[in-house]
Length: 254
Image (cartoon, rainbow, N blue to C red; front, side, top):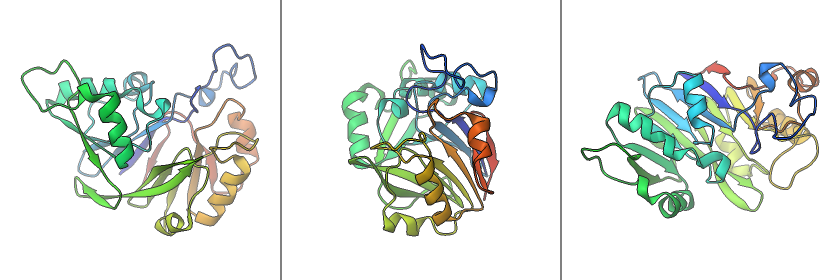
């Protein structure tokens, strides 16, 4: 299976509008970060999205993404949800409804804010045609087991996901002990890492490295970064096995 990081940026993206810092002015493409999202191509050929941020169309064009068979939502903050209307293109291409999966409250939020997308297939494909599916326990998608990983994002509860031996944890402020148990044996870890300074709803570099050490995956990639983290500077301070993710990064896993 293959994971592609569609975006590794925080809610503002990088460059940040109106900012002239070294990261925002960098010519290194690895410092150009769209809002965080990923796609996973299963052995069956089906494609899963994790979140639909506001840069989804740009990301799909950049990575030549031509199909989406399901979406896993971590939570419904704007930088993880507000590209949902761009699923319309994939409904049109595939002539099929796309199922959405996530916490019950996330699915309720989508139903209340984007109810026009929740439709059964008909003769016209001028709008997204989606369905909502609340999940709280492991479930199967296209022959692959998907395990929701409950984590804290400040005062709210959200989901990370484990697919095979890969785990994707964004917008984390705390990983409960019971969720740490669900991460045992993970080979590839994608882990939230907002900035150097502490933050009330995200782990910072120090905390990310501490969790990476506890989870002990073979390889860890840090993402959901603000412009305060410059690619080369952050890479230089990381221990072996921990790397900085970037838009377009591709990883193989089982």
